[in-house]
Image 1: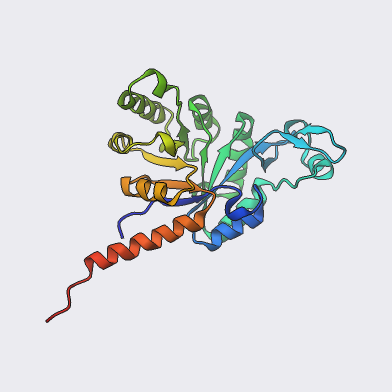
Image 2: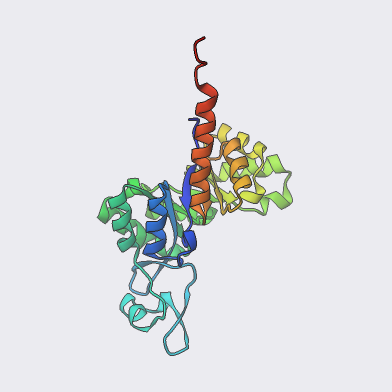
Length: 252
């Protein structure tokens, strides 16, 4: 079939908790291409899966991941925080790709070291990288591919086409392979401009199947969703429809 967008499962897919092995395994079972999760860092430099720095401690206080060691987090937190290394073991075994959504610049150097240690640069890429972070990523992790999280303020101060051109220029200057942006701001014109600049278009977080269908038809490179079942079902539906169109007519 014509190229269907890569299916990226957002952490917490299929109703499972965020940052959980259950979410990963449920997504992998559906045949996804990429698993996305948020990356933060503990005081002792261990990358963990977490969206926010603040965590709830067992005694009712609020703690900070960046101010606690991994052992302290495990001992004091009400919520488990898997390490990136633990998750990558599963990713490698499955032969999949992981999108590492960097939530703090402090994670760049230890993430880079871990990926090199595990020899997994072909199995990961970075997102969550605004322009300045993308430049830092080029310093700490030059061999790890990265997406540019676009500056949406460009859309407020420039006309649409010029804003997209500015985003593309920033992505290329930061040596990113594509743009990462909310699907609501995507138009078909954006796809044309970004593709003409040799960049990919990754969109998040899409839950409605008709939005998925539209974006796939426009030719985005990846769609992130918390319901990959909808997206894998759509992929099969579009594949069957295309195969039906090219079936040779029966001989009389």
